[in-house]
Figure 1 (cartoon, rainbow, N blue to C red):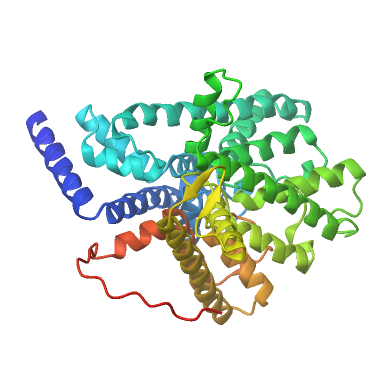
Figure 2 (tube, one colour):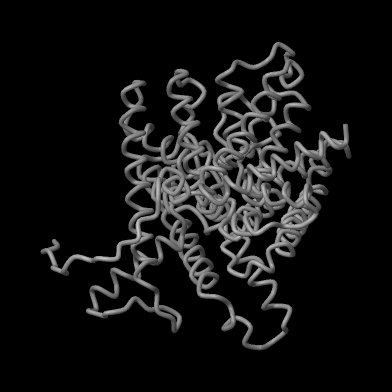
Length: 463
């Protein structure tokens, strides 16, 4: 029997190595889909629901996809519909999805072979945007330790507050842990009835959650780069940060401030959202509402009561999303920053796109254009399909589609009432948004074209 299991493990590893060499993106998508399938099957069991009757196929699949894709869109109330077992399954899906399917695949390879093979290193290097293959093994441990440490710190910050609010020790610990993992992974799932609406003025609950969302949206490369440089204790450690880190942090902060100011201005006198709040609570609500479109999906005020202008602004923030190789979705803030920098360079007549004393390669700009165009196309096509399937208004359909594609989880309140076909559409969109546009294109590409002969150059008229 041991020999048989050993032979099967060796054969499986050989198949995985061949798959990784020939079509790594397809392998990653397959593994990711397999994780969703496992969570889906667990949620179909009678033990997963509070009623004990079992969830419908579409509701279980939608919830599993939303959890593993760390989105937060739900068709059933998480706190009341699912049982304790169901909550644990959802939380496991969030944790696995947050770490990333390629990291998970590398860990599985490490568990079988006790060492990382080249293909697993390449897969993980692609997911974490790491170029030194020799450091991937240590990087995996660092990612898990760092993520778990941040989640535990957030949980410890929330635990005393839930105790003060009346929860017993066990319930407070569970709520704190769930919110800690859900916030850092930008998942948006809530274990408490009515979500965060009862805590709209509670700084001790909303601030740790917003902080966890923001840190998680920066991405592991940024977090690790900051930690590594900070440990050097050099007075100029900020200058030593990578260009990716500087772009991600500065753009994220700029979007946060701009979003908070605009959302606050739009909702300041809205009686259904910020209007009845105190001045300090309005500031808290504005900042919180600006952080959430990074890809979290938590809301401290009813989204369906917000103005149409706020919906449109939130659409834009959700489409941009968070940092690369992070738990956030969207086209990513670095893509947005590179596009803006290219526009500025073109307006100035500069031949190169430069920032922070560095020149951005042209192929990075081409990649950014591809990401934005494909993302916009996916949103457009999905929005048309959703409008065809339902009687939603354009503003509602657009909000739901962008929220699903950018794996955000914010909703105008129509998700639960959608027909099954629309639920499958949004679930597919969450999968595409989490796997990534470039990974999807790589998975569908049959071969990498390398041309020896190039045509003569001629410049068409633009604009």
